[in-house]
Amino acid sequence: MTEYSTDTALVVVDVQNDFADPDGSLYVPEADTRVIPAVNRQVSSAIEAGASVFYTQDWHPERTPHFATDGGIWPVHCVAGTVGAEFHPDLLVEGPSVYKGANGEDGYSGFTMRDPVSGEEKPTELESMIRAAGCQKVVVVGLALDYCVKDTALDVARGGFETTVLLDATGAVNLEPGDGDKAVAELRSEGVTVG
Ligand code: VGL
Ligand code: ZN
Image (cartoon, rainbow, N blue to C red):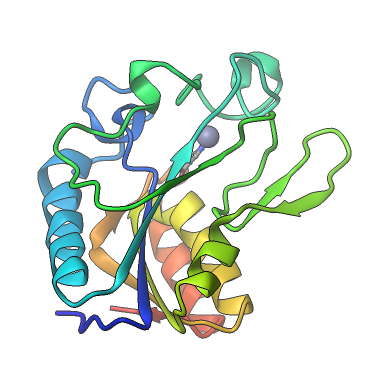
């Protein structure tokens, strides 16, 4: 069990219907049966210990080069304002949420957004929120391990935070078999604790 304290932030990545509901367009296996209950336990422990809890939501326009329909690799998912973009109803929501991709930016991290046309990287407000809360340690959970959880955790670690990803509270899309395992290796090689 992770020990939370007031200098720790829990970041819950993209626990939205399109990823977490079996009928969602990009369902991550076990998201609803295993991942959400584990995430909720982390949220409760964090709140009890006075830690900060933040959420991200993948938040796409109807047309974006992120989607296969416009040259990308993904089925249409998490379109702003749709049910698929809402938090899964079982998720405990106990803090503010940061949207990513709202202007068609590509990239998966909750810390940075990449403009799909110019390739320019811009920060989201998440990093400043975590710093403003006085946190040095960050725990990252949610969906999906091999995309948004991985890229968020890598950016968090590069930002100088002591960074942990909890395997029981995440799951992989595995677009290619083994992507989840590769993500774990990459996280570890960049100094992220994977527990
Ligand atoms: C994600 C694929 C496409 C994620 C977002 O949240 O991990 N994966 N968009
Ligand atoms: Zn997306």
